[in-house]
View 1 (cartoon, rainbow, N blue to C red):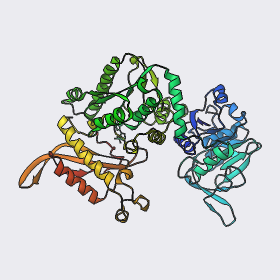
View 2: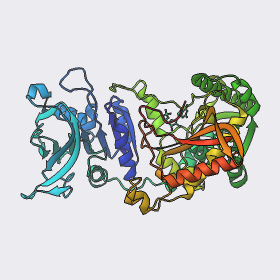
View 3: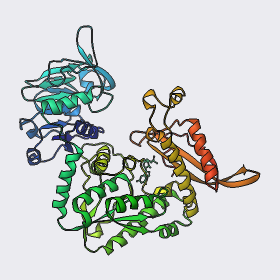
View 4: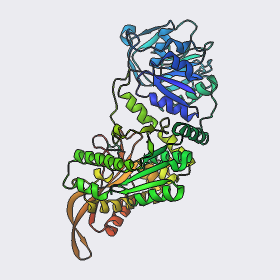
Length: 540
Ligand code: XMP
């Protein structure tokens, strides 16, 4: 496995993702973990991340000395390269001191192809026979003088030491960012480091992981009982399936049905877990409680708070009945861990805000079991499939914690929830049933590579929104005066920014027709064409 020491870069997570994609296990830890931790970790190699600081200032982060004393390969990236250079006796200067411009964005570096790291990796070759890499750089400081024993591994006209290596000691460093996809050969470079240089095998596979995780869960909980709040979302579902595999009936799941879920979601969860997998699931019908608390409330933030609080109360009341439970299982995944660690993260300048529903209160006196803590979302999905959950469920679009509560604008009523659930189901149904064609490519709605995929897979999140306004319509010979729904579909990779999806008109037309014909109470459908920013994905 590989140890990644984090100096606070915004893209450190991507290093871990690329390494895991190369089927090598790795973890991110802060740069100032103890020597003992690093020594005992058993890494085959260490990667030093980028970061926002400057090594030209005295009190900025440095790698623990032991990193360079263990006799294992080290790869420094950006700030990681600068601190490596400075700590091993080279010289780093700010752009101002060196009389050069800062460098942000796309760049082409010439690889001196003799090193094990970059040998035969290039995007193109120049007339003189030099291998060239298209990379993404983002730095103010530069290494101006190599440390003893190092050779230049790559250069650009403005950055003569764009990468360096001391191959005898297994030290490599790159000024550019191989972890971002803009560095086209970045994946190849990181694979070369972990496989070729560190000698890691490709043993990070889900099938083996299950056996390991099952053992770990058994060792952790022994004969204790465990409870888990099952939401129907991917993370809690996969956690439930995994824990059930490990301890069977020692696990009890509590599924709170607040009436603000997708159409038939409750039945689906019961079918999948209770019926197919034989998991003990207590279904709590809390629809009336939630609706009662939400009556007359139309402020979005207040609605969120009520739903969150009520959820915790219902769950707590139910779990108190399970007196034997000693553990509370949660579907926390690795990005949650990194993000909450980031709140006090050393070295980082800005913190990304996120809005998962708050955790359950500490006074439940239960120990926490979080078997997915080490996994990224795509790994959780793979694990779910390996555990026998239906692929369709595991690859579903995300669904917000407060559910339809933030998709029914204004006051939440059962009637609105029912109309919305049915409209939403029709939309999703049509997205799943419609594949992209050459005509969509010609219309600029998608690319050639998308042909044959469903529009559900081509969008990141899609749903209907209930608007508390009525408009006039005509059906048959009669006048109608009914509600409007908006359709929302977005394409995004991280949900921080998003484009509205260019769905084919025919598809939108079909969805609109079906909704108006099949859902009495809705007589108008509109499509949301706002990006994020300035709009958000959800309407509330
Ligand atoms: P916004 O609306 O902020 O949504 O652009 C970004 C992503 O977050 C989801 N979302 C939530 N998820 N609790 C959640 O668990 C929430 O309160 C919440 N609000 C938004 C949203 O569905 C989208 O995927």
